Image (cartoon, rainbow, N blue to C red; front, top):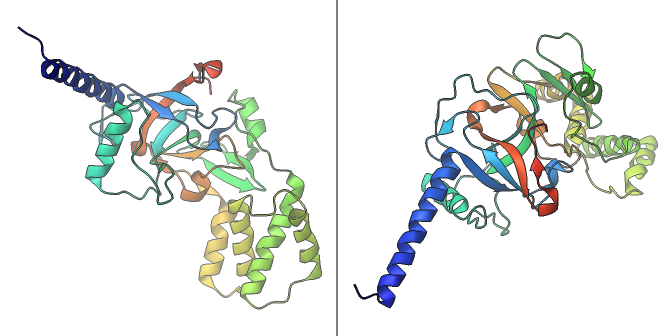
Amino acid sequence: KKRTFLSETLEWIDALVFGVFWVIIFNQFLFQLFLIPSPSMVDTLLVKDRVVVFKDQYGVEVYPAGPKVAEQNRRVQRDDIITFYNPEYDSKGPIFDILSQAIYMGTLSLVNIDKNEDGTPAERLYVKRAAGLGGDNIYFNNGNVYIKASGTGEWMEENKWRKENNLSSGPNRSVDQSLYPGLKAYARITAFNENGIAIPSALIEDFQIIQNSEYSYIFDYYEYSREYNKAKACINPDSLSARSDEAVYRTGIYVPAGYVLPLGDNRDNSQDGRYFGPVSETKVNGRVVARFWPIGRIGLLTEG
């Protein structure tokens, strides 16, 4: 049969569609390539690292963000680096969600049509470390993590607890602890100003700590919010809502059964479970197992 330009073009289109179809199938049910969009996992994962995610590690999604099958006894393990659906993601509708995911997977993560209003890629999926499991209590103070693991009765500082349990040393801090008095002063000053209370000179002096540093902004929103709500509760001790808001920070975060508390390894620059709380294991869609780009950073991540 005589070959024409049209027939050649149709054959190429057919082969391309066939290839993309199988790429989507593999990405949906077996593995997915994922581009790291933010510094929340530094130094374990850097911005623009490309990683391989095993999609059937915790059950198989029927369709993107859909229900999972075969998830029985396939639970998230402590310290797994996981991908999960962003609890604060603003969906544009199920059709767009599925279409954008199909394009993202079909182009091996090269094309992402899901954008924020400012043109930056929307983070529908987050990558974090499963730091807390069902039954754990997690408490934060000055950016440091303290854990009361399920079945234990005492709080332990995370680094010590990790060392004793042979867990990853990936989680890290970068902010100097000496800056926290300035941050707390900033939070109290804000609460005092909102209630028309004169600012003590001692608070102004403490505030100078961060004003004279490279962190002339709120570098730890969780700690800032905790101190702010604590000040409000002291100013308005009769306010039930103020006392309730303050108690949330004082008691820490409890992780219910069937949930995980995901935290970024870059503890000083991560939007994680401190802010949106524990995440159901049904919303965890895979485990990051390897980094394949850039070439100089190729390696397995199965040990965290």
